[in-house]
Amino acid sequence: MSLTTIVFNTGRLYTASGQIIKATLHDDGVVTFMDHSRKVDGMFTLDGGVFDQAAVMAAYDSGTCTNDMRSFGDGMSRGGCNTLIDGDI
Image 1 (tube, one colour):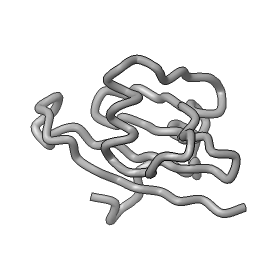
Image 2 (cartoon, rainbow, N blue to C red):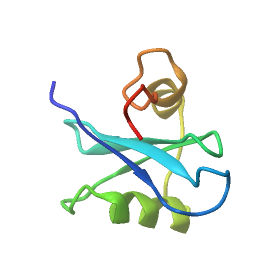
Image 3 (cartoon, rainbow, N blue to C red):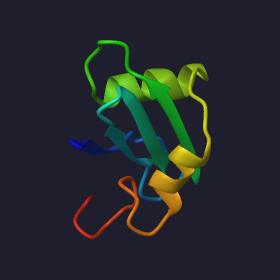
Image 4 (cartoon, rainbow, N blue to C red):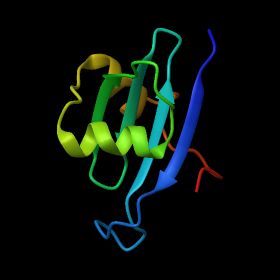
């Protein structure tokens, strides 16, 4: 299984550090993400587009993302692919 993960700060002032999001593109085209600043997880299908900050924020801001145990587990479970680790930011 091959995963591609990005971490970025939107610069929105939800916390003193901004808004930290970690997102992962899975082999099946599903993107899961965790907004660590607001404690919100989500997921959406990337339909042939580019996996980047803009794609994640477009789905998040438009409300077209959903969430379930997959996105929750990726972001909140110890060892989940969207769990923040030292050095991410």
